[in-house]
Length: 361
Image 1 (cartoon, rainbow, N blue to C red):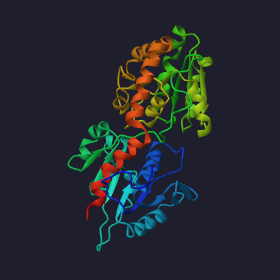
Image 2: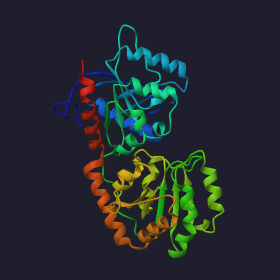
Image 3: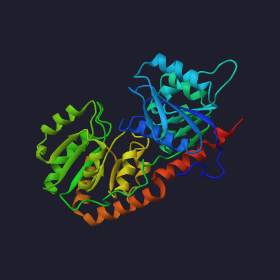
Image 4: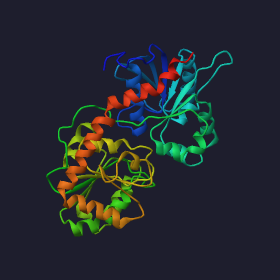
C-alpha cells in the first residue's frame, strides 16, 4: 500500500520500534511486531531494534539492529535511539522496561498487550512499564477484561490483529481427502494450546470416524512430551507429529486439513485462528481464552469448554462426518477474514489507534 494512503492520519514522525524479536516464524508476538513495523513504515520513518535476535536483517525496507540477548547493549542502544525519535512503540512489557526518559526530555511510548503477561499478577517491573505508557494497544477485548486490574485507568485501545497477508490461499475450504484435524502451534510445558486434550480424545474420535487423522504442526520445548503422549495412545497410528515446518511447506499442511482445532487457555487473540479462516477451515477453540472472541460460535466454528471433553469430541466428530457443515462454517470464516482480518484491515486499525498518540505535541 502506498505511503500516505490513510487519509487524515498524522505522518512524518520518527519512531523507534523496540522489540523482543522480529525474525519471521518466531511466534505471535514477533508476527505482531513485524506487522506493526510494516504499518508504521507506510507513513513514518521507523528505526527497529530486536533484543533477542542474532545478526542484523531487514523487515521490508526497515533495517533491524539485533543484540543476541545482550541486554545491557540493548538497553543502552534503546536509550540512545529514544533520544533521536519523537515516539516509541514497544512490542511487549519486557522491552518497555528498557525505556529511558532524560531529565531534559520525555519520549511518550505505546505498548502492545498480548494477554498472558497481564492476566496473572505480573511482576512489579512489568506493572511499572504499563503504568508509564501513554497508550496501551490490546489485541482483544478479552485481553483487556482479563487484565483489567492492570489496565484500569489507562488509555487502552483494542486493536484486533490480522493475517500477515491479504492474498487468497491456493485452496480455500476443507480438504476433500481423509478427515483431518490440524493443530498448528508450538508445544509448551503447560500444553497451553491443547495438544494433550486432542490426544486424549482421539481414540473416541477414531472409533466414530475410523479414517480420522490428527496432525500437529509446530516445534516447541515440549514437543518430545507430545510425542510421548501420542505414542502411548491406543490411536497412535492416527496421530502425526510433523514438528517444526518451514514457512514454504506450511501450505501443504493447510491443504490437508478438514478442521482446525486449538482448544487452548493462553491466547489473547490467536493469529492462527484467522489464518485458519483465511484457508476456509472451520475452527474449534475453547471458552477459556481470546480464541472465543475471534471464532464466532456456531458461525465460523465452535468454542468448547476445555473441561467438557465429550462436547469437544462431539464437535470434532460432527465436522469430520458432515463435510457440508464443515464447508459452511469454513466459508463463513473465510468471509470474516476477508472483511475483518486481512493485513490491510489490521494496518488501518493500528494506524487509526496510534494517530492521536503520534500527532500529539
